[in-house]
Each structure stands twice: as C-alpha cells, then as structure tokens.
Image (tube, rainbow, N blue to C red):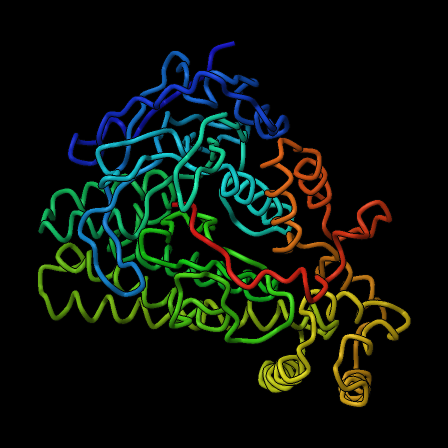
Length: 474
C-alpha cells in the first residue's frame, strides 16, 4: 500500500532544512502501532518505516533548522538534532500532517549528540500525547513506538527507541528566530506565507496578512494555555523551540501532571528556577509570543515604530484570549454556571486554589470527587478535614445548574497519566515487559469514565511512589 506524501516543507529553499537519512537499526521491534490514527493518515503498520530501516516511496527525509530561547538564553542554531521529518500526508479530514521519526540518529544539527532516544522518553511521549488527545487538548499524536534493541549511552547504557510523531507541522517560534537572527528577512516572509497557507488561510485575505498571522498564533497559544492549566499539566520545557506555530502541544520531555496542587509546582530536573512552573506557563507563553513578534517586525510595517505598535497591539490581546476560557474551564470543573459574573468566579477560583495549595490536595481527584453525590472522599483529601468542610460549605452555597454533577464528570478526568505510573511502565519496559505500557495507553483513551479494571491508574501515588523529577530525553 503506497503512502500519499505531499512534502510542502521540502519544497522550501534548502537553507530551511538539511536532507538526512535515518540511521538503520538491525534488531528493531514494533511495540505499538496506533491503528486508528494510521487509518486516518493512510499509513499502514510498517516496522521498517517506523524504525527508519527503509523509507516508503515519496518520503523526503529532512531535518529542520531552527533556533530558540532555552530557559531565557538564546541559541542561534538548534535544529532537529535527533528527529527526521519523513514527509507530509493529508488525512481523511483533508488536514495536512507531518510524519516524523524521533531518535533516528545523527543529523546536521546534532551538535555532537548521538541523535538517538532512550526507550523511556519514547513511551512517555506516546502515553502523554495520546492522553492529551483524549482529554481534548490540541497536541501532536503518537503513530508508533519502536524498541531498537541497542544501547543508548546516557548516564549509563539505556535501551533505545524510535518514536513516530504526527503533527500539524513542526514549525516553531524558533524556526522564525533562526532566520531573524541571520537578518534573513526574505526567509522570514517566505516562512510566514508558508504557515498562512498551511495553518491560517484566513490571514491571507486580511489587510495586513503578517499581523493577522501573528494574531492567529497568539490566540491559539493563549487558548492552549487555558486548556493546560485546568488539567494540572506542566510542560516542563517551554522554550521557544518547543512552542508550535500550529497551537499544538509539542515535545513531551520532562512534562508532568500535578499530583498535589501548588501553583509553583515544577518537575523538570533542569528547571532549577521554576521558570516553567504550572502557574508561570501563561506568562512564559506570552513571552514566547513576544519573541515571535520580534522576528516579524521588519515585515509587519515598513515604518519601524508603526511595526512595533502593531506587534504590541497584537500581544495585548493575549490576556483576553486566555482569561475567559481559563475561567470558564474552571467554572465547568466546579459545576458553576458559565453565565455568572466573571469577577466573582475569579475570586472564588483564587480562594479555591489557595485552599488546595495550603491543604496539599490532589488536583485531579479534588475535582473528580467534587462531582460525586457523596463528598466523603473529597474531604479525605484535605490535611485538615475542617478546612475541607468549610470550603465545601461555601461551594454548596453557590447556585449551580441542576445537572451540574453530570457535566462536571464530563470535564473532570478520573484518570491522568500520573508520573509514578509512567515510571512503572518505563521500568517494566526496560525488563522487556510492555504489558503495563499497553494497559496504560488503553486506560488513558477514555479518561472521564470510571472503570474498575483501571482503578489503580486513578489513585494518587503513595509517599514512596512519588516522582519528584522528570527528565528531558536527551
């Protein structure tokens, strides 16, 4: 069966990428193939393709060039150091999608690295990206996970893997920064036109298409943040090279879902200053959008001052795009009417989150147990039961729709991909046991429905099970 590739990025000028063949792995094993997604893309199960051992007709393997601010410091050249874009296909809904291999060997952008991936990050990204999709969050998808049966050197020899990722595109804020840093305005404009055609065609007919393009991305990113936070999701490494132009969540490295709530919660081992903590993510996203706006200044308007005014006006829209969806999401989680006063909702939400932080309440279970008829399990989450009862009395005094509990269960997941469960999956996989991995993927496919067979996946970690740090795959 042929794959209908149509590789638009590979038709851009050569300075946008480097042609690159994947490394071959002689003893590859297919761990999982996403059959439903594969059918949507017209891509059959193919270990040779997913391992990089052979390429289907029409593939044009390339590694993309980009730069990026990493924890605030600018690196003018990063690029796909361990990823190869095989090509693009149009799915059964007419949407263009990238097919990329991660962990497929050295590229022109590896900067001394081996270009490989350990198996653990492959399984983590498969689990979390598919869980995010099931939770209704814009995200890259997992098509396949492969064990390479070779050792990857990190702190010690670790089993290797290759991940096949599907994305609306892999164009990032850092892609624009790469060309802007070289003062290659022609390339920036060509990239804008490519992104408008691919992601935001409505911007093409605007009075100022570049400004409209910027506004579209700002809105998409603001709304993405408004979906992350109500799920307790922490990306962990919100560098500009991990900020997608399409508005999808991308690059699940040291990501995590919170157990006990705190707005300053961080898991990423390398985020020593809590730059990317749960509560900082909207601010950092706005910072990333500001970096994008800087790259567009030369083409926003011939007059430098006017260009700056336009950029600032677009950036000023971020809070409006974020705040209402964010508050509405939490109002739905709390069972409150979305027609009530936003300011009052915001005040109650702030008080609620403050109580949750002081009481170290499990974030996901708090909202899920709140949707129960009986609140015994909810009160049990509080260190101080009286504090829980006081909050509950205040919540019960607020007028709510009659069907609020049903609606709350539809937006408050009972299962999230918890860190300690992912760690168990990875450790089992290192013993060549992939049954826990398959079970977790399947358990996360319907995260809002209680199922007795997945009760262990619903539970918060025991003290000795807690994962304090998560790590980048490199």
